[in-house]
Amino acid sequence: MVETRSDAEAKRKVWEMIKDVEIAMMVTMDEEGRFRGRPMRASQKEFDGVLWFFTQAGSPKTGEVAQDERCLLAYSDPRGQNYVSIYGVAELVRDVEQQKRLWAEPLRVWFPGGAESPEVALLKVTCEGAEYWDSPSSTLVHAYGYIKAVTTGEPPHPGANDKVDFTKKAG
Image (cartoon, rainbow, N blue to C red; front, side, top):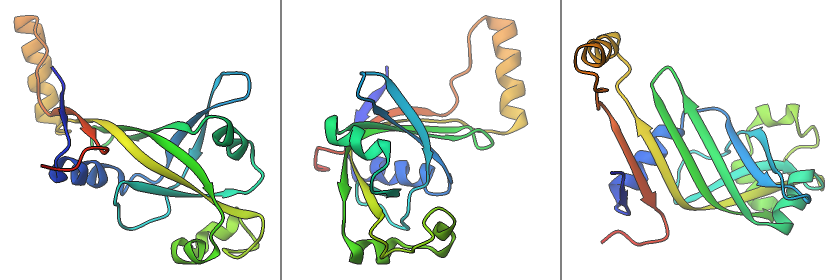
């Protein structure tokens, strides 16, 4: 059974698992009630339960989050066998000072006008919960898993699968 945790360690683990994953798939709901996903890059070096993404102020995703603020972020690190899904609420934020704080020059490829451009905005995702799958990625572990499955008919259980509740304070 998957445990739901709300402790600071579990929240830190989520950040540790996603901070080096360059691209997440952000899923929102379009105006016709269909899921819509697109690749997005978080723009921060620290995590306090909020993730920030640069966007074009008039993009379809900004209209989608205005209609339905719920979103899902999916992170995948197949080499490390780490996977994280985060759900939360997204909102469009127009804050030039925050944009300047989060700005990194490689973003200019998508936002040629820079952090202060009127066409640039931020999507702020306040995390409500996450689920992660953290598995050892060594060849030896996979070989052991294969042998166990073949000989016993049971899959191995290496690694962790937990849920994390960001809405509850650690206690």
